[in-house]
Amino acid sequence: MSLKSGKLIVFYDGSCSTCIKDRRWYEKLAGKTGESVEWLDITGRDDELRQQGVDPGKALRELHVKDDQAKSIVRWTRTYC
Image 1 (cartoon, rainbow, N blue to C red):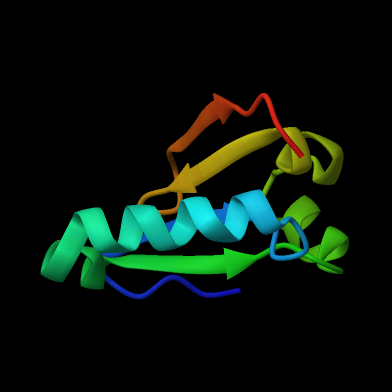
Image 2 (spheres, helix red, strand yellow; image 1 turned 135 degrees about the horizontal axis):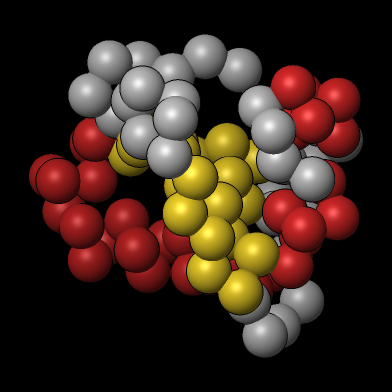
């Protein structure tokens, strides 16, 4: 799981239809600005998430975002899925 310079990485649940819809909505909303976002499907990536300091269980309940320096993690609690 590598982060390209200048990009945000958004961890999302690719097995959740609502999460996929939300991703599409955010991509449409962002337009060209969305090119600075890398979406990472967390399905089956528990070990990689732990290496990034993200609890896999929380990743299913909260939206996690990291910056290009891989230092900041922002979490938004989801109320669906």
